[in-house]
Length: 614
Image (cartoon, rainbow, N blue to C red; front, side, top):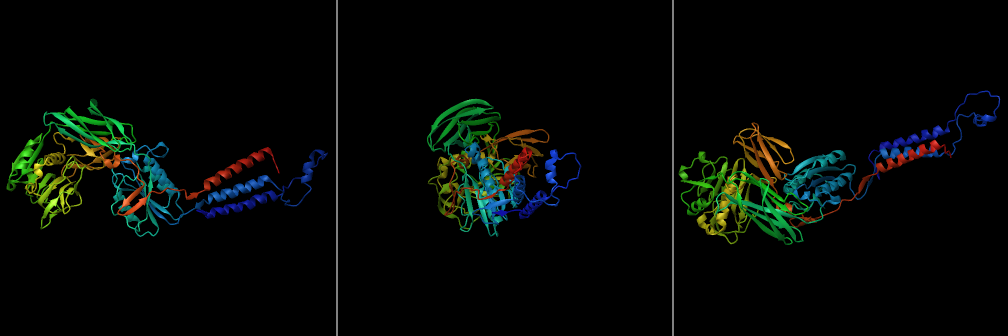
């Protein structure tokens, strides 16, 4: 046992004063009476003239001394230290991602509630000389509370952590934590969550002290993991909805999906999903010439509500302007002409000027000296932006190795078996991600930053048989719709949770989220306002200072977050971090001593009132 305030023990010296008060003898005034028969007790007290009397046994005195001693010890804040070294620097990483809103937490709450309770135990276990820091990683990793030895600010910061529907950024959080503990001799990183953040890469070394505290108990969940909308090829002015629903439970599930337009139920579908199975839902014949709100609902009683709804707007009236800058490409010209809702114009590379960027620009075998904000598709050319560079020698005989099955550009594609006789080997900036790769070089790239959204395929279409495969027209359709954004036939105004959204704005706008919170956004010189607080699913409103209002939707659509099965270990390279439990190893006991002191004080008063002298 140790004391946080040992000087408070000096209060126990006052017990000597209590004993002294019981040693003092009262000095009485002499009075004459006709008879002393009725005053025998007074006469007995007056028989002694000494200033002090002999100390007699008195229960009240002992109770008063015990009360004082207990109060002194309580004020000294005694603490029991068990299995804990002093001077520990702990960084607690709190998982507040989408899956942490699952309702199988301890006591009937959410997993986030349980995670915060376990983090609170770690804070209460702090010993003298310890310090703790809090970081959350739902969406962007955020430092909620810097290192402090005080439990009060840590508890207050813990209460400020709110749930999000955003995917995990645990790698960012671990890198942040490793940076702040660097140089500290006795430190540990504690990750509190359900383990849904996945593989940690090679972030952890053998000397990194990392703990994992797991929460959650069940895997019972079904969710919408993929969604797409296209204008019907057969019927102009009608939309088709494609959705994929996956059952992440070990038990089969009966689910119903229904499609609503402007709040009215249009169609419903029922399916039985096998354990860990998935099925597609198709809704056809949806009218959408005018902008209308589409809502797809999955009716199933499970633990996570955020993946049971997808929202967006059907808008089949507007078209996509495409400028093809090419010396001639039969495949491209033919397929672009077949895409519904597109207006395609073609010019030779020597006639291109940056002022022509009114819509989507496709550069085939050509790249201008510079480009400004806009939407671009580069074919067999390196984009003229900082960070892009092509190696001197191209890659020969590249074979498709793997591709991203979740990105809108490569969704629903089957690229198995594709081979390319020659492709550029591009180095790229960090904001560009590879969507398809060979062993030697990326084959499809995409990215968005500061008003520029682009897709690049660094090979000549004639250097492969891809244009003859069914996956190529689907890729071209996906790329056009993703690049164009508010494209004809696309589900416009729909964005993934946690993403940064570029909104056309000529003046300041105010954005309100589904919970009613508001943010002010100012446009930049490109007349774009950027908003990154997209951490909850639902409808958002963007309102200009002159009253114009637009809506957009944020949807989950994440296999990682919908798969709510709690993990019992985290992987980093070959290192495994197994789940541990939080024990009450270091605990202040002053509250129990204070309660005991109060009970003794009440007993002393009760005995005094009854005049029970011993």
